[in-house]
Amino acid sequence: MKNRVGIIGVGNVGATLAFNLASKNICNEIVLKDLRENIVEAMALDISQAANAAKSKTIVKFAHNAEEFCDCNVIVITAGIPRKPGMSRDDLLLTNAKIMTSVMNDITKYNPNAIYIIVSNPLDAMVYTALKAANLDKNKVLGMAGILDSARMSHFIQEKLGYAEGEIEASVMGGHGDDMVPLANYSTVSGKPLDKVLNNDEIEEIITKTRHGGAQIVKLLETGSAYYAPAYSTSLMVEAILNDNKKVYPCAVMLEGEYGYENIVAGVPVRLGKNGVEEVIELKLDEKQNAEFAKSIASVKELVNTLEEKFFA
Image 1 (cartoon, helix red, strand yellow):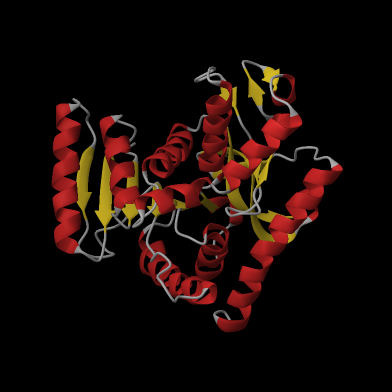
Image 2 (cartoon, helix red, strand yellow):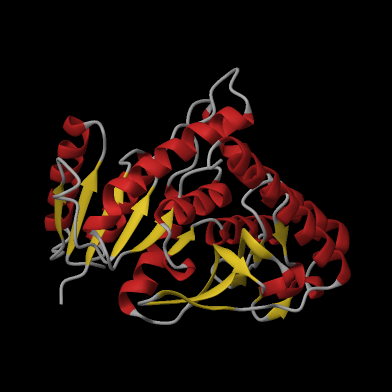
């Protein structure tokens, strides 16, 4: 059986993801779709040639229309606009919700068995939008954020220690924003709990840096945002689903009673397989973490309330 991955939105993240998947031979076929047809055709050619250089068997194509973008096992959506000067948070939210809804309405009927990975921002609200727009089962739509945020936390731990590259396991929950919840007690260095190798002040510094890791890159770039780490993080999710390897990753999913919350999207550890989200794993949080998670949920709820009042009403 062929594994086909669709990518909608071939900007920096989408193109880098396609390159990662193709060069690593993760799937049989990749189909790209973007409003800029000349760009997406060029990207398909370029990435296909890279795949051949890597001796990969992955075929890279582009779709002119929704009918050609069909029969995908996994679809990754990066489509959306970045926040521009003078644009309010609600403007960005409602503009990208309109784009997300249009995309989902355009493609779901041609991809009845697909698992959808959302990368567009604001991430948690866009997962919510995709679920509501397409009326899909919650296991079929999830967002990429937790792997990226955990990778950023790992980087800042390594930066602080000056060693342990590749031996750090960091864990982050909550919404993809300033209110995310880095979990120091579920993070380790060479198997040792983080608080055994760093003191409380150092851990708090790492947590602060993690929460602002994306903004740091945006500030340095001046135009644009991160794409290598987001794309690689997404490729791990795609690989887990296609290979049905039941790996546990933090992903943004709809909660239906887990952690005590209903009808809200947040980043939590999940087990990924061929059916998408196959299990939501409930970690035991301490009092402070529960409070921080509640604050993170509240931030996402504000966005969802705006959607319900101004978009889905």
